[in-house]
Image (tube, chains in turn orange, purple):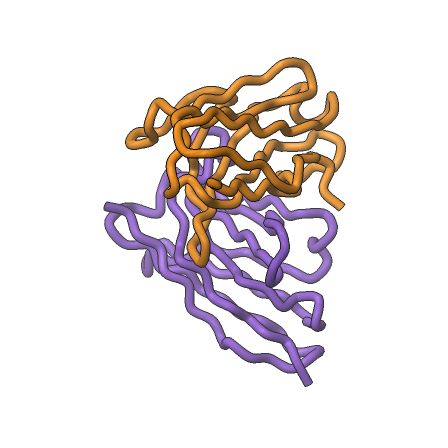
Amino acid sequence: QSVLTQPPSASGTPGQRVTISCSGSSSNIGSNYVYWYQQLPGTAPKLLMSRNNQRPSGVPDRFSGSKSGTSASLAISGLRSDDEADYYCAAWDDSLSTYVFGTGTKVTVL
Amino acid sequence: QVQLQESGPGLMKPSETLSLTCTVSGGSIANYYWTWIRQPPGKGLEWIANIYYSATRYNPSLKSRVTISVDPSKNQFSLKVRSVTAADTAVYYCARGTGNGYELDYWGQGTLVTVSS
């Protein structure tokens, strides 16, 4: 069982804003950077957000990240059909001494 | 453009040792954290280990059975998993870690390893 909890699913219509939460603890999100990965169907994950809220080169500014205390969130604005994917948060966990991924959220564009 | 390519056996029997190799092209293997992650079919991601030069870090849940190594002369790094069981069936990804090692900015396409008798 992952120590980072995400909602299993999220959905919206094209153009809408969708937010995905990632809940952790003081040993992971509370004291380390959060990363977000996007996994399109049948492909490898792709780094979507770095160090809580830094977009890697090439990631559209429709994607934004934030962190507060022991929780983090990823927002997708102007939702598009090609945003349909699984999204995972991740962070180092000081207590477990391992990098942990969230449970994953499947985003569906209605 | 950095590219990573995993190679592995595909199908294995329980109790065997899994050997995976990741070949890095388009960049040097120096100065980065080289990482293995796996994903059981239909499930989430699990970080296995990383290596930075000769320094290694392992997921404690797998540490007793895995070894990560790097061969700079071949621009490759490898993973061995001993005594595999059906629970080790997964797509295995290699990835490059930058920054503190946990910013996984380049990934291989993944290789499916199935453990079955």
